[in-house]
Length: 283
Image (cartoon, rainbow, N blue to C red; front, side):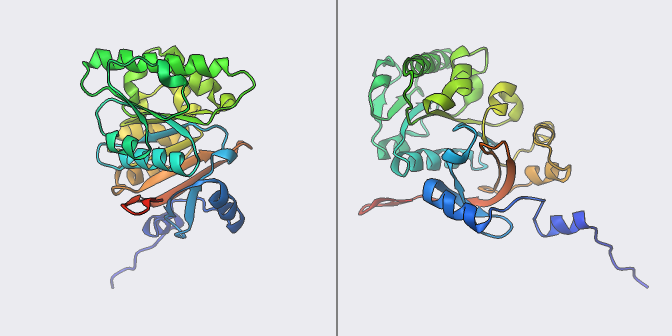
């Protein structure tokens, strides 16, 4: 006689794609919907998930995932939503040229690689195109931009900005970049946030990862990096294979709120942004 399979609670959770993730209650959804930006629907109950920066410990966002997993798509989505919905000023430091169209849509002032960062002090979003520079020049130029932002930020004593700095390929700036560390540690009190992305967690300094209140984890095939993630955020061992097998656009969102409460939510797919000639953007 054929024996029937025995299912444990852990096995069932994998089958149901639950993985112990947390879902917001109705009150949290309504509050965050009024004050935040839409990310996508949750993996368990299919409820809308919003990123409410006002409720978070700080405004910094770190996105990690392999090429093609969806992290660049999310970066573009965040920068446009921050600009159009939150009225934020966005400073885009683009190593590859991937963000030129998004920068044009938000009306960012275009700087080529040779431009200096003096106009950082203006109220308009800025786009720095570094694609055509040599690698060492890209890092040098990006460092100058960060220094300009850090200097302006520290000069705004008693004043809060609403600025976000987008840095894809941010691992290139990890070698003792003092100004990046200053923005990470002090940005919250000056209203300056970072949008950082990298392919592996170990590419980033522990200080930057630990000081980012929002972490988006897309597919990572390197087991060592997945293991570091579950160790850092006290996740179960089952998350290793789960992170390695995430579909494109699907991710894990880990947030830390102002009360030091950490939550983990599965996003079944990052929301798309539709471009319309009549309405310009449908967010």
